[in-house]
Image 1 (tube, helix red, strand yellow):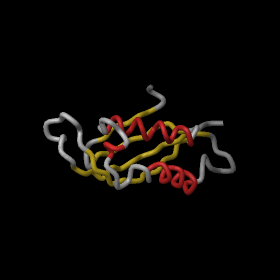
Image 2 (cartoon, rainbow, N blue to C red):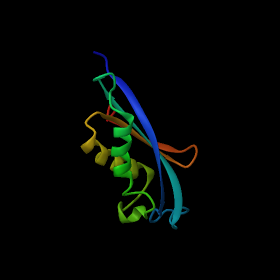
Image 3 (cartoon, rainbow, N blue to C red):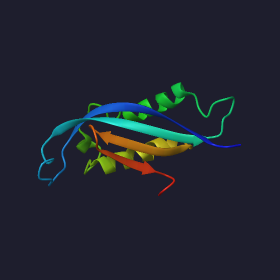
Length: 116
């Protein structure tokens, strides 16, 4: 049986600062778009119910939403945020393939298990 991928997009609003960074060293905010992709075989016609996937993702993301990311990560760059979210989601979603974080418009970071 062939595997299929499916994904969802959620968002979080956060603040952070990057210690020592010339322009991003002061507290500022972002709306991050978080894309999550899983892969698996269809079971009962679905890889996973979208509602179940969204619940798992929202439960993880609530820890980041409306927070100062520096309280979670010592250097809350998009790369470190993406890796941290991927790590937490991979504990819950054994089929996790990819997490992509969009920092505003036109800037993104991705952790993909197929290339690591």
